[in-house]
Length: 91
Image (cartoon, rainbow, N blue to C red):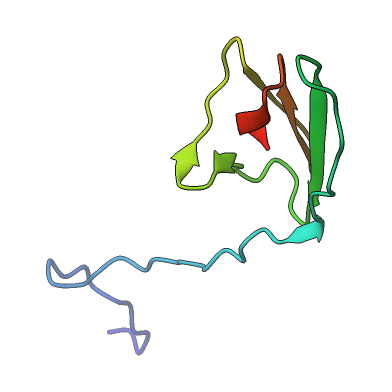
């Protein structure tokens, strides 16, 4: 007879699990007001506190998507929105 104790498997035992709460990405450098000419191109830049954090570009309540009018770039913590063929309603 041994005096050692060993845990026995039980079907009711739950497996241990870990979870964490990710801190949100914040603006390290916010967008700056930029002037450009009609029918020209402008690049808006911001810098985030977390690299490759998901970025959603919006104009008011409308989400912008890449296409002929908009180009989105992201490298590390920097995110850029390029707007082509500027019109008055882009302001």
